[in-house]
Image (cartoon, rainbow, N blue to C red; front, side, top):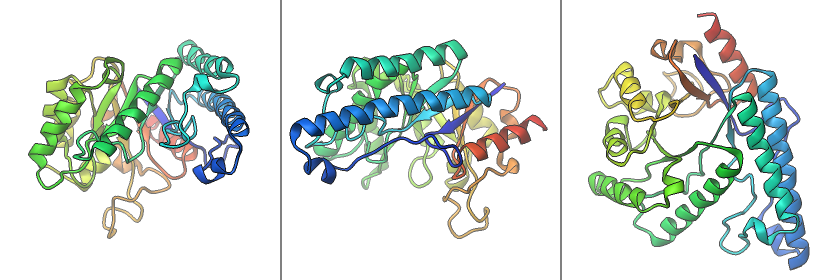
Length: 298
């Protein structure tokens, strides 16, 4: 059975996650700043709980948690540890309650860090910020029971093979808790499934197959073959991604995601197997619910 996943935010529902900016924080006295951040974290914990309740009510069994669920957590100036905030125990408890809800109702949660997380960057600054972001998301993952922190491989930096070697080396240097959740996804510009599957097999890191990216950046391998090879990298339920191109496959830029997912883009090979499929579409919950109805009718 396919477990369908919703990514981060809502189109129609009133559930919202609050954010802030470094500029705004800089305008606050230090005491007001930590109080404000504490309030944001608590509000977002409640929004996560509301999101999970929505998913339960609509048989959506996976929810991708917004990367900035703890706003500016790793910011170089205004970053913080949760236990430095007022009501820190209440914040942690609220997220742990979300984890209990997920376990009770068999709802999976995942993370997909922002695009600045590159584990093969030659820049020490980028590497440092990337590892800090992964450690932060691993902390929240432990609270909520998320089993995936999914990243793209990064850039080629003029030599793809050397960049892949750096990726392999840096993965193995990560804290064990981060590695236990880390996954790698093919992208639509640099790294194909054929580039990343050997890294996944060597490091024990599962491969998240994004079929849209594979269609945008083909490597000569079939969807059926990559599906089976991807599944073999997992020691738990595999996670895949799907989306459709805005303007169709004949558009000048098929990389852009459409509001909804075309049922013709859903692989027949994914029917009848136990996987999680996160729908990456601009219409969010409306798109996922529509896709679920259409797949059920196949």
